[in-house]
Image 1: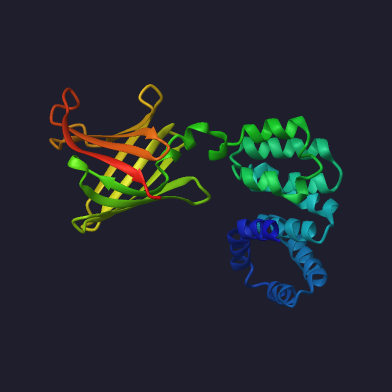
Image 2: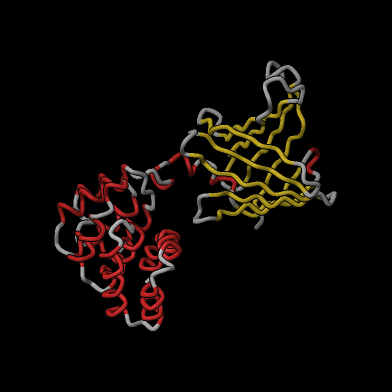
Length: 295
């Protein structure tokens, strides 16, 4: 049921455009009412009549494709989705692949799925669980297509900061506790969310994630005073550490900050912050914290 909702939601904006363009056609309101009453067969027939008089209504073609697929009329679903492929929409190609697969046309399904990915379809999780694609999921071609999806799951670099996830007591010099931090994975595990509470009462949060297009890790920090810092960097395997640099304007006189998270052990992380006033030629210590995992 979740898959069907996803497909319907993807097309809902397009369908709404079609409705606004066809307000003069009283049949549209009638078809919508039939659909609301779950009289899908009659609604489908009426939508088809409306499309016949307005063949350029791509949003309505899409709606008919989805309705046909959901009613298991895969042949007709293929017909309507194929009418839309010239627009190059990856969602259309994905739904076409699903209809092909359910209709027993595995070769065509794989070709449509490959095109969907090439044109930007990136919902790898849906591909790997969608029951419509069950007939092709064990094919080597499917596995190759899945590996080519521009999805965070296909980038091992995206897990390089997982060592920071956990519940921590944080200590500074002389083993004095300076705060606590709760580091969680959110948004399907693709974002690391920091919740900092300092012993002095200062609080702050940061979002950390691997950005596929730039190939870099990004941290966006904001504190209780609405002060913010934006970092970019990468994992350094030689130091076994995540190294992030504050991003400042080239002509800025602002101090440059380097933030290094050392993966010391499964139960400890060192967060080392340094400042530079000469654009990174020399560095001074801002703070040096040790995270100790709570029992």
